[in-house]
Image 1 (cartoon, rainbow, N blue to C red):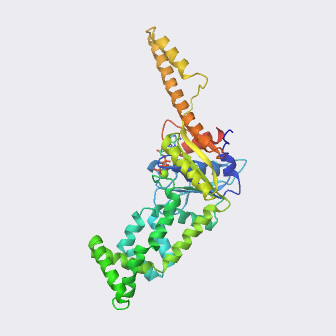
Image 2: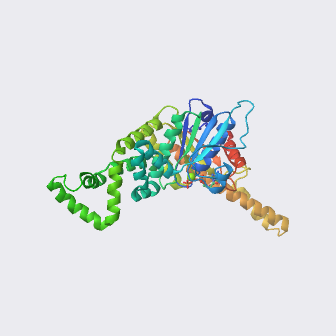
Image 3: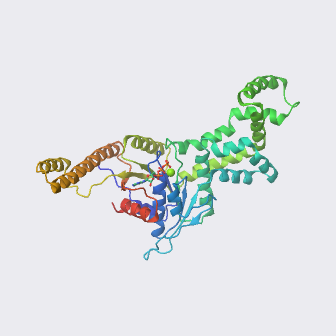
Length: 381
Ligand SMILES: Nc1ncnc2c1ncn2[C@@H]1O[C@H](COP(=O)(O)OP(=O)(O)OP(=O)(O)O)[C@@H](O)[C@H]1O
Ligand SMILES: [Mg+2]
C-alpha cells in the first residue's frame, strides 16, 4: 500500500485546526517549520500565533523578536491574500522562567509569591531543571488557547535529544514536585521543631543528616523553605498539567512530527509516531525535512558518471567542466536515492501515517522570504 500524503495546506486552512504542534528530534527543523507553517497559514487568511522556542538569532530577528518578553508580537511583512484576506502572523519566544514566575504569581498570595520567587532553589529549578522548558511550553500553549485570540496556534517544541521528552517531561516535573523526595523534605520545615512524632524525627534526622552532607545545609534549608511555600501550589500545578494534557488530545489539535531522511531522526520519528497512536493523540502526519531533490531526475547516476568518464578522456577544459557538473549531479542522485530508500522504509513500517517532504535548501532558512519559499515547496510538492 502506498503511503498517503500529508496535505499541509488542507490542515492549515481547516477552521477546525486550532493547534499544530511541531515535534521531532534535535535539529531536524522544528523551529523553522513552525515559523514556515505560521507564515503559510497567515498568508492564506488565518489569524495565527507561533510560539517558538530558542530560535536562531537571525530567524528571531526576521520575526521581529528582538526581546524575550513572553508576549506575541505582530510580524511585519506578511502578504495579505486577495482570496482570503485578514490573515495575520504573531510570533513569540518562550521565556521559560517568566512563564514559571507567572504560574507562581497566579497560585500564591503576593507575599508568598515573592518569597518563592526570591528562593534560590526556585530560581535554579525555574531556569534549569530538565523538563521545565517542556512544561512551560505546554503551559504557554494552554494560556494562548484560553485567550481565544487566534484561529491557529503553531507550537514549536524544545530542543531535546529525544522527541518523546516533550510528552514525558511535564509529568516528570510534576512527579518531582509532588514526589517522595520533596515530601520528605517538607515535613521538618512544616512541623518545625516540636510538632512531629519522635519516630519520624529519628528517621528524618538520619535522612536529613545524609542530605545535609550531600547538599550542604544552606541548600537544604532553601529547598525546604521553597517546598513549604510551594505546598499550596502542588494541586494547582498538577491540575494545569492535566488540563494541558487534555488540550493536546482535544479535537482541533494536530501533531506534526518533523524528521529528516537519516537513520537517527527516522528512528526517533518512528518512536514518536507509535507513542502518539498508542496514547490516542491526534497525529496529522510526518514532514520529512531537508530532503534532497534533483532537478534532472531522468538522468541516472550511472549514466552521468559514464558520460563524465568519457568526457574526461578528451582532455579539453570545457569537457572537464561538463564532467565536473555531471559528477556533482551523480552525487546528488546517489544522495537522493539513498534518502528515498530510507523514506520508503519508514513508509513501509508506518503505512497508515501520512507523510510529505520539504526540500533541503542550500542555505539556512532565516528570513520571511525563505520561510515562505520553504512552506510553498512543502505544500506544492
Ligand atoms: N529545509 C531546510 N533547508 C535548509 N536548511 C534548513 C531547512 N530546515 C531547517 N534548516 C536549518 O537547519 C537548522 C536547524 O533548524 P531548526 O533550528 O529549525 O531545528 P530544530 O529542530 O528547531 O532544532 P533544535 O532541536 O535545536 O530546536 C537551522 O539553521 C535552519 O535554518
Ligand atoms: Mg528549535
